[in-house]
Image 1 (cartoon, rainbow, N blue to C red):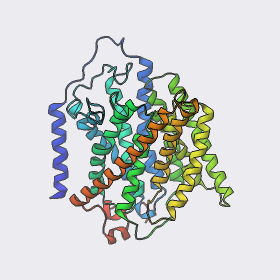
Image 2: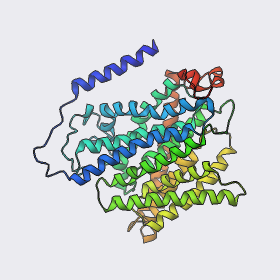
Image 3: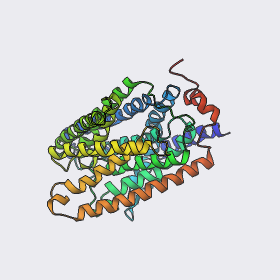
Image 4: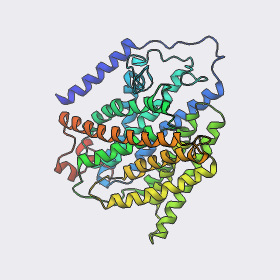
Length: 428
């Protein structure tokens, strides 16, 4: 019955979209729309979408050979699940009329009603509102996909889909609203998050930590990556897509986009070099995996600060993030917490470093400019987001587990998730 229920629920959602969705309102004159900004944002949205397949390769290459397909599909399936959820209610919860600055009214843009091709000056003055909604969709897609690295090789696929839906509604949407909505709580505090350091990376990292704790350790902790070239390919795709992630968050083809583009590249470059040199300093070999993780950590850390700092400061942020995350991974490995692909010490810690350094370095309002308000509110936001995301995610794991057992059986884990969950194998 449970298998049939999945299809029935989805069919009902499709029918709701069909019946309640309205035709797009076209404007006769395109004077309000800047064609350059619109063209860039279409491209940036495609860039960000590419990050999720990139993440699939990045994660898929690092797990054991028995769970490559499962791990990659956990990222890839978010493209479908979150896209439909976003249209039905997700966008409205994130960007609908504000309810106490915490979450949007689900009725505001339910089934994308009111999401027209005319610009909405509350969010982006020069591009179609529909394009803004689609750009934000790509962020909503990759966030739950990032979490999957922490519980790889031991989660039931159907349970993961349910968790992804609940996380997006109850964790991601409120954080996006509080941070990016004009009336959002954190935004009105003056908290700066240019492209999602708090909303995406901190939330994913903290939910990953909660997941690793809740699901417990794997029966066998296999640390040998299945396919290192997959990891390198995934890193390249993520780095490429991150230009849309950060530079696209300027919401136009403008100087802020150029600054964010440059800072994104240099922070990642600095972090990658710092990581492999630190490995050699620690009498280890300079590894491909280390170079890739270092590059990603730099991208994570620069995300909240991308449009607010100088090139030199972006290099500094990448350097600091690499050192902090490297030591965080070493400490994490010695703990009893089995975060399979080190999502928390990479994305969570990287996001925290980026958030704090944004409060220190942000142009004109950072601590180094003699301003304390921004830094203080960043610390308060850090505490608030940590408590809300970690304990909220723990609650969602528990609810998911009550509805659909969240962990696979021991015999299924032994066979590997590729065979037990999907009936497929990469390696014979």
